[in-house]
Image (cartoon, rainbow, N blue to C red):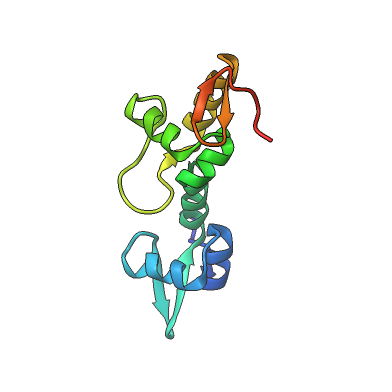
Length: 127
């Protein structure tokens, strides 16, 4: 049986793209396997890497709007129509791959962003 590799809170935070406080917050709540040793948190490196990979699969509404070049309202409509997957809970909540697939389908259909109207067919690119 292989022994676990442990990393400190600074390393865990770096891999996760979080602050040390946020990494410890996750550990305290049992969201990432970790232990306190001599007053310091150490994290199971394999679980931290797996959690980081999972987190990269999700984006915020703002990030998704930038990826799809549309408004957050247009994304809300795509979620309501079942084109973009949303997860319940806090943090980034739209699945990156569904946002990108939806954005590709919009471009194929000639739907682009306009400054005030969100995403409309044949509107052309914005300045």
